[in-house]
Image 1: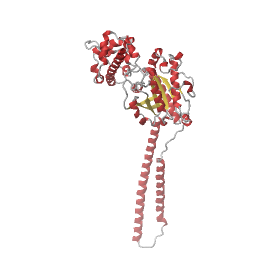
Image 2 (image 1 turned 30 degrees about the vertical axis):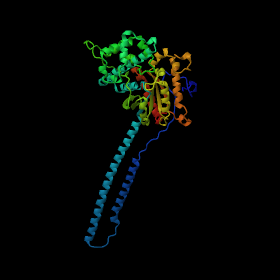
Image 3 (image 1 turned 120 degrees about the vertical axis):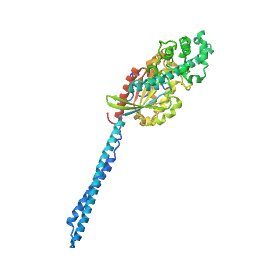
Length: 475
């Protein structure tokens, strides 16, 4: 159940459109590793000193020795034995000295290596991207790659074309099926024009393998023309708006409106083949499966840092892989879709997206390994949210919400921020609450590269400063 906003402890009125830190300051101590190598080498040095003392003692023995009277040959024999002893001691001393020099050099190398590793650890920020399916997590990941590694190469963009073709086929198939279902209930707003009804019926009957197998060859110019005519029909747009229980992407209109550009007329020699842009690339919905780790070297005003970013699938079937990634994480970036307040899950049409998002956050953030970890919440897809809230009241999600503010985007963002704040501390003992990490909020449109760059740069500086405080480098 959704908790009332008034139940949030220590909540301050902060504009959610501006970055906000829930906690200002926390003190933390650093356990520094100590090298034991130096102690070992000191011990070897002491042994060498003892050897030198022993050598000097042996050198003084001949002068203090009382010789017995005897033949000259006996005296020469004794002198020869003493010389052999001194020679052997000299060799031992030389070997010990060489060994000590070698040990000293090795000691310096070990200490230098330990210092280098310590500095590298201090300058590494391990970031974990989490969020429910359809939140825009992979889009944020792509924007990070562009920001820190430069423009996406042509091979990646070319490979992205097949995903775009598959998205288009999947979307039109789901839309046509949904429209047929609405028409079975004889709802006038979903009645298509006669000239496109047959195309809608044919598409709705596609077998699932038809879409998955070679989408590029399936998406012909003839089919593109049918998709264009269907999308221009007001009944199909009405179908798309009522898609909350359907598997339709938020970026469906983007690709449908340029379908004739994506699939040009093959007989028109003047029209070049369509090329995928980065704007197209970030709008592709490609479900993340498995674990993807990227390393980015980032130059900041506090020096160069290594950002290790891990992206994992947000679907329920992928979440069992999350647990193995929880250790040694500096920050969790948790992404949710603001526009999904009236939608249901892709994999479970009985579960509302926002309910899943909040429950998942509560369960994950309360894991003991995250007690001191910073969390950054991205309220994503704000562009779609701002348009939707004008016509779809927030009471669709929260019936008890003040009807006077049901179309007020600012009030809704304040509501969801307070829900995250409450769940961050909910049912935790006082000892764990005291050492909680920081909680940051940012409102984002992940497909807007310029906006995302500004937000990511702000986030990286907040995280670096927070990490330096935890390690004792900043007050």
